[in-house]
Amino acid sequence: MPFDHNDHYHRLLLRRLPKDGRTALDIGCGTGRFARRLAGRGYEVDALDPSAEVIAEAEAGGGGPRFRRADVTATDLPEGHYDVITCLASLHHMPFATVTRLRAALAPGGALLVLGCYAGVTPLDLVAVPANAAARAAVHVADRRRGAAPPPLKAPVRRPDMTLAAVRTEAGRLLPGSQVRQLLFWRYLLTYHA
Ligand SMILES: C[S@@+](CC[C@H](N)C(=O)[O-])C[C@H]1O[C@@H](n2cnc3c(N)ncnc32)[C@H](O)[C@@H]1O
Image 1 (cartoon, rainbow, N blue to C red):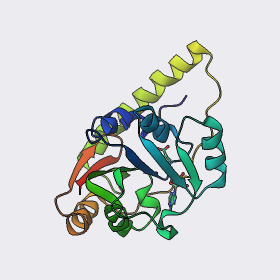
Image 2 (image 1 turned 180 degrees about the horizontal axis):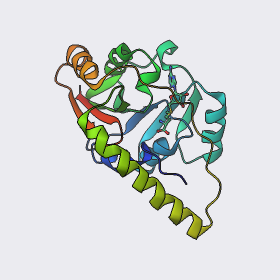
Image 3 (image 1 turned 30 degrees about the horizontal axis):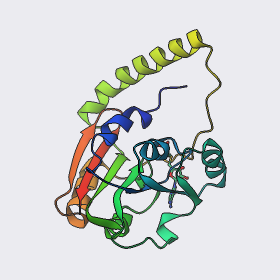
């Protein structure tokens, strides 16, 4: 399987799950890899994506989540319900202000965890280029040795248009008390607790 920048951060996200959480919503779930990991941790998982193709693939993978074909910007979410809401590389597909709807759907003490993508170049991105090449080469060699299957279906992708600075400004305005941490591979982690 090719090196995947989003899957690379699954363990980081799993370490930030609230203690004793039971209900989870994964936004832009793609083929469902992270939603299945949440289900594996005992969560009741709702997982949304507007792409019929990836939802079909997600459902074929099973593993417990309730997968639904839906656009989160046009779907009613239950208020105060979820102990954790996750968005992995999906928030930049929609207006950033969608986070206010996600905030309203969090149960008291619930966590919003966004693995986001940003536009523009920062000093850390200069390190990301060789690190990315090395990670891809390592995965490629390991796959060839194992005779790995061809890459799975890729979820729809889109270029981000907000810089990291703009993400920090909007997060501060719409999610007071949130934290935005820059990560390697053109990503950030936004954490907010209701
Ligand atoms: C880059 S993919 C990431 C998929 C998955 N989270 C992962 O980590 O592999 C972005 C996903 O967001 C979904 N998406 C785009 N617009 C959306 C919306 N309005 N509501 C929910 N999901 C959306 C896309 O269909 C796509 O599957």
